[in-house]
Length: 319
Figure 1 (cartoon, helix red, strand yellow):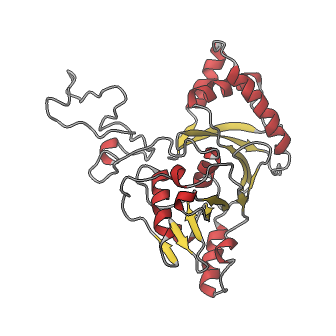
Figure 2: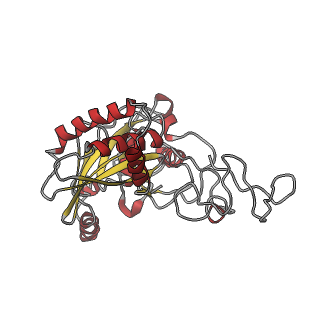
Figure 3: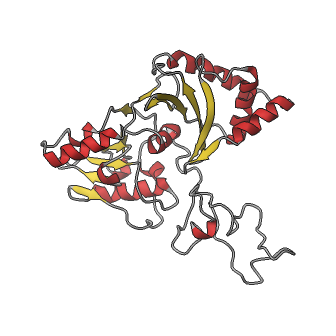
C-alpha cells in the first residue's frame, strides 16, 4: 500500500544537501511516479488531498482466477463469467461482465439478476474493495444502474464475498448480452451498434490460463496474463529469447508486455491469418519451456542480461 507523502515537519522528513526531500525505504516521494500507474507524480495523484486513501498493487491476489480477472478488466472487450456469493452474503449467483452500458459499476436487471462491471470509470485505489462495495449495494437495490461516486468506506473486498474457484469465462463476439432479456428499441440498437464496433474479435485459449488471441484491424496478437513475480518472469523470458524459444508460432514475435494490477502480460505479434486454433498446442508447449526456464537458477549470461534489459524496457503499465 502506498503511503502519503510525509509532512514537512522536522520530525517526519529530512532533506538532502540539494534540498530535495528524502524518502524512507518503500515510501513513495511526492515527485516520484504514482505506483497506481496513472503516469502522474504521486503528489498529483494518490498523494493529493482526495486522491485516494489506498493503493493496492495486486488487488486480485489470492483469487484462483486472478490472471483472468485482470485480463477481463484490462484486455478483453466483451466477456462474462458467473460469480457465486458466499453463504454469508446470500449464496446467489451474479454475472461478472467486462463492460456494462455507460461503463456502469453494476446493474440490477428487471429480473432481479445482478451484473457487476469490471471496466469502469472510477478508481479508488483498490478495485477489489470497490467491486465488493458496489456489489453489496446492488443486493438491496431496485432495478437500475448502481453507481460508486466516492471511495467506499473500509469493508470487505471481492475475495471476501464470493466463492473462489476457476472462472468459467464466456468470451462474446459483442455486447448482445446487454439486451438478451430486454425488448428491442432503436435507442438500444444504436448503443449496441456503437459498442460492438469498438470490440475487437477475441478468443480465450483453453489449454493454458488467461491467454487471449485478438485481432485489431489487420493485426493479430496473443496477450497472456501470467502470475509469476515480475523479476522471475523477465529472467525466464530472457533465457527463452536467447535460445529462440520465445516464439509461440513461426514468425510470431514477442514485442513487449503490459503491466496491470501487479502482473505482467507478455504480448506477441502474430502472422496475419493465424487465428486462435494454431495457438492452442503451441501455447501449451511454450508453457512447458517457460516453467523450465523459471526453475533454472543459473547466473544469466551477458547475452541473457542484455535480453532481459530489452524486455524490461518494453513494458507498458496499464494500472
